[in-house]
Image 1 (tube, rainbow over the protein chains, first blue to last red):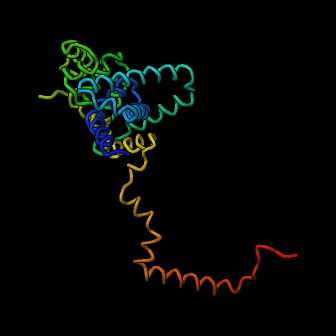
Image 2: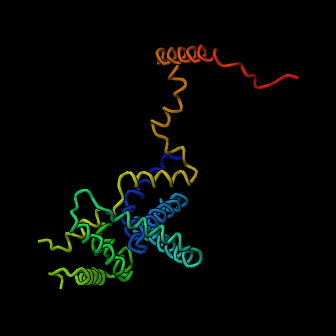
Image 3: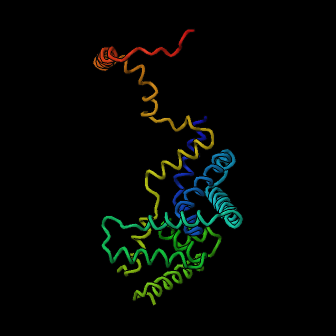
Length: 176
Length: 89
């Protein structure tokens, strides 16, 4: 074990775990799966830490998100071939638990949050990923553009479009 | 002024984010999965390994209690017929 290796890993983990988690969540709409994918991504980081250590931050980030995209693609393939009905049901049950009442949420707010959760799941993937990166990942449109290889203007348009669709779905005013 | 959707999204997003415990757990799992479990040693875990030794050092009362417990149970056992594990022919 090397302290320098661990320090490099911790630096990358601290800098990127939130955005990567948001990326996986946006891609899959699955909280449990996102955790698994996040772990897989950082296992790959650990295995390649010497290589990553020599790269500038923007290339480290590009490497990480390339790995993340591949993990999601692998997951789609695997899901298409071997996901059973039972797994889907179990996952849906977990998702239901995740939107279980928060201590400080009243019934109306809880219903709104459940409706919002469903509406976000139903967004087209491109829109959902940018929205989740912005809200959960706390990244701005420029940063999201860098992560996804899209111009910031496109990201801003997609964010606005995602919010328009959510407002329409939830019948909220002020978004149209 | 934040609109209703922004407010809902903020609340929703806060519930999706990883907790500090999850962040620490995933890091530990990655290191363990990478064969680096030794890097995740924490003080409590290390201390638990040393308990047999530290018990002897600090635990006069503990040892005494154990001894008394043993004697007590031995006295109670007098009423139970002795059953050897091995029976010689």
